[in-house]
Length: 68
Image 1: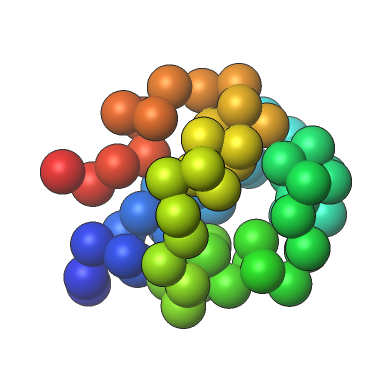
Image 2: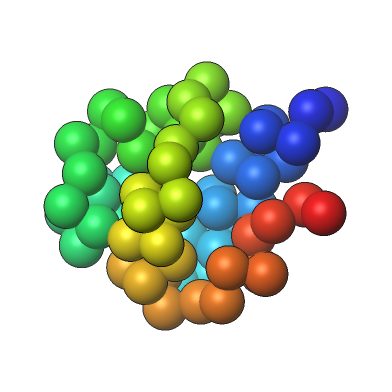
């Protein structure tokens, strides 16, 4: 599993722990739901700004989702 997929898996776990849907996280981060879903699947390489929006929406530290 590559780092992009591991990152996506970590996002998914954090989202589930927060009891949020992909749509809820996407809305809080002001992202399209499909784009957020692709990030979770490891199909997108989001910018740092997008990552910060997601981490803020999940109310976690960025170190909790980075695989390295």
